[in-house]
Each structure stands twice: as structure tokens, then as C-alpha cells.
Length: 70
Image (cartoon, rainbow, N blue to C red):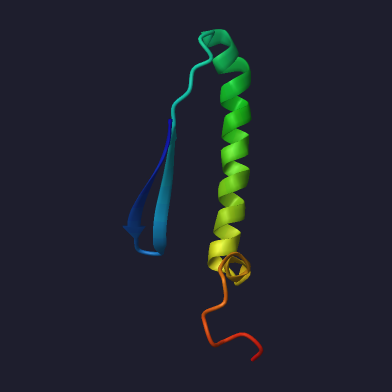
């Protein structure tokens, strides 16, 4: 299960990821999956933050009608 929670703070918005998982083998979860998934989410969130705070997000949205060719 993977959820996001957003909270307004003085300098913007705090996003909190809650990620619950289980392989059915707790030592594997602790030694391999947890560190791997943590790194994956940190990298993913850094990319999202960079796009959201810059102009990169525009590449993922269609141009509004009537703007093309300007």
C-alpha cells in the first residue's frame, strides 16, 4: 500500500509518503526491500519536487487550447 499525505507548512507543502509492504519473509523485508524501496522513493520524490518547483512540469501537460503556435 502506498499513500501520500499533504500538509501546508510555512515554506510550501510537506508531502509524506506512507508505504507498507511485506514479502512474507521479514528478514528479506528489513535487509533488502526496505532500504531499496526507501532509496527508490527518495529519488522519485526528488524528481517530482524538481519538476513541480521549476518549469519542467509543463512538459507533462497539454498546451491549453488556442495557445499552440505562439
